[in-house]
Image 1 (tube, rainbow, N blue to C red):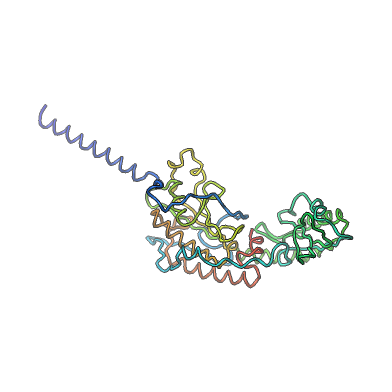
Image 2: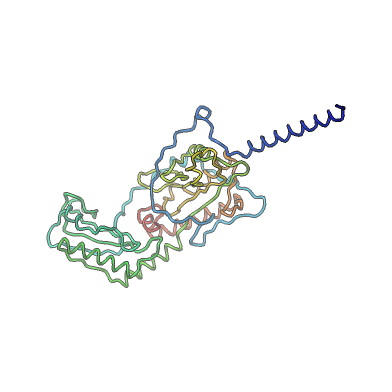
Length: 375
């Protein structure tokens, strides 16, 4: 064998080694990032499966819907930055809890209400037995309350209590639209059936007046409904579901009831989550989730469901910035356009105006009435 042939063999072997090494490096670089073992990550806490539930609506693009509030993307090389944002997540978690609700149950502000007066006292058990099997009139919630003389307040009929006065109500509007004539007629039939069962006389409001009120309320709600959605997209290597969960858990998010969904819980029991993080549900349910590739996650905020004192938008920005840094991601709109920091301040200002308008209508964000209306 000549020196030339030997040199060719050596050169070919070197090329083959380089190709194999490059392919191995590329495969390792593009493999989904996996969570670090527990012993290497002492700050990691177990992820509890707890999610406050509420009726959500379909999420919109990166920005606000309603009231002309829209977050805009930026073309070119701009990348998200939060240098001007000074809210600390640990401080945000210690914010004061909103004051207790003073208005719950049926309310003339968002309900059509029919008083019902019984001929004699009715037991709570009898009232419960007389309730219709469904609690909806069309797409609107329907409810019956009894007046507790001892507590001097309206309440859902309770076993062992006795009532003389009742009221039946149907919600005037929700995210499915305004109460219409057919739904009002269904409300009348349900309330009349309840009244007949307990020997009581209902006094129904005028249908045309209530339907007109419903349309006006629906118009206001449509113009002031706001839902924010941002996408955090991987710059290079994809993420595994476990990697997403591990980084989200460090910021206080917990696993929800739906695969691929994590939430930042509110401070009070029974309240909707402050923020929601979602990713591919199929990746979350995969037989081998650590081999599944997640390239983007969605951070969303339902503005009307969360009290402004919890600073939900500031916390969303804090979470987005922290996740983007830890996971090497870039914040985008749902079209993939990076969102620079300059787009955040106008949205924050628009949100403050929206909060003020909801307050002026006695439908403050996060209140029981607002959560019912915007559901």
